[in-house]
Image (cartoon, rainbow, N blue to C red; front, side, top):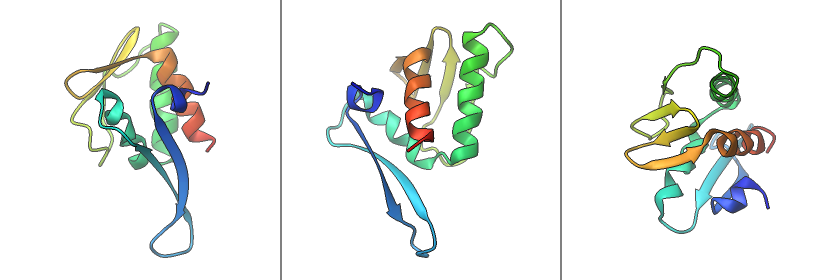
Length: 108
């Protein structure tokens, strides 16, 4: 089972409104605590790689930003507190699960 399946997410690509590129979308059919993960829709490839880098740093005991900030994610706060990452007020996911999910998103 993939991480997106585990969290009940669907990834797909749609034509941008200008018609010259594809845009990645992350959705979840049911409202649930994991609905916060649909913020992936707002991460471009660079932001996804940046968050993945911070997670890898945290997992490897290197310096990392505890508060991850990204323009327009729709999530009030993303906090990296090993061994977890926290979205909003109470969505807690292990860093390892988030790393796998980000890799799936990155190579969509």
